[in-house]
Length: 88
Image (cartoon, rainbow, N blue to C red; front, side, top):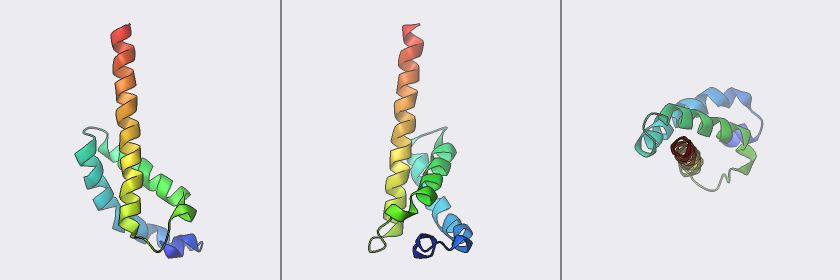
């Protein structure tokens, strides 16, 4: 993660391989059919917002917090769609 923060783009595949399995498993526990979408969105945010990562804290905890946010966003959208469909 520090290498990414320092602008080392060669670290991207390593970080992706390290984070994808636990982030995907976490998303699978929170959202059923959309887990892969949530995990992918989370990893995109992680790479986009790498400057917000605090290197003195555990990287996985931060990644899972980002993933949790994406999962909650998906669940809120699902709820809105159901409400909109039942109103029609």
